[in-house]
Length: 301
Image 1 (cartoon, rainbow, N blue to C red):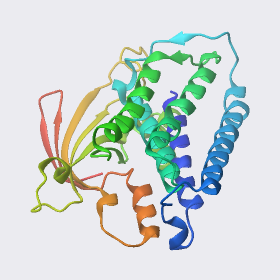
Image 2 (image 1 turned 180 degrees about the horizontal axis):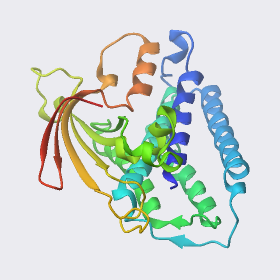
Image 3 (image 1 turned 180 degrees about the vertical axis):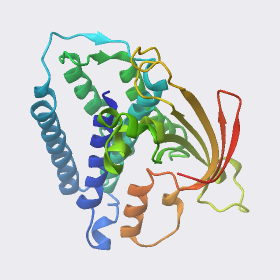
């Protein structure tokens, strides 16, 4: 079960964007032209964080498992693809962070996408190579495809529209399944938030006005399509140790808020909104599942 490591990495990098850009309002304002001092600070800081994270993973995580010669695995059918969506999410969010920090430094759009938008793909590829030399896991081509999809979602929209009309977001609610396998799905809220696939939902959140070009709808209102799954106690549906898993795919229709489209003159608030825009705002939701059932949620997390 590799994905929760990537989740941790993603949220650590996003948290960094708050601490590194917290300060006076003028400091947070985007530079109108290339600010070499800011650019160098961003590059050195992100490179240092990436190096420290990779070294820490190698010493604190991979060292607990036997090494092996490089190998690949096919895990595309595990966890009803929830782990793959986790890779898409991490790659997208890290790319968004990389581009936004370079934008803050006044770097050209081309270089923002080339060196910032690919941050997630580059970093997660390094982690995937670590997996390839671990006896416990292996290099997964489906993970790499998911990483590339996340990067493509960010860069593609910037090239097509010069804005993110469709956001990739995350939400979570606690489930009963973690209590049955706390070693795998998490013991307590903090672990379950990262490990329990049954409570995770990934959303494509599309801004309505960006497509309809109407002034009658608030500019921050989004329409969100979500995917989740439950009934999973193990990655393999045919695991003989857990023969009675009632694995169910879930699809959601809901509303959302694009926090970055809320008008404010405060650069501090703009930064905070940008950071927390990774989380889907709780709203009522309509659920459809692959068993033909429809369910209404008055409020869905």
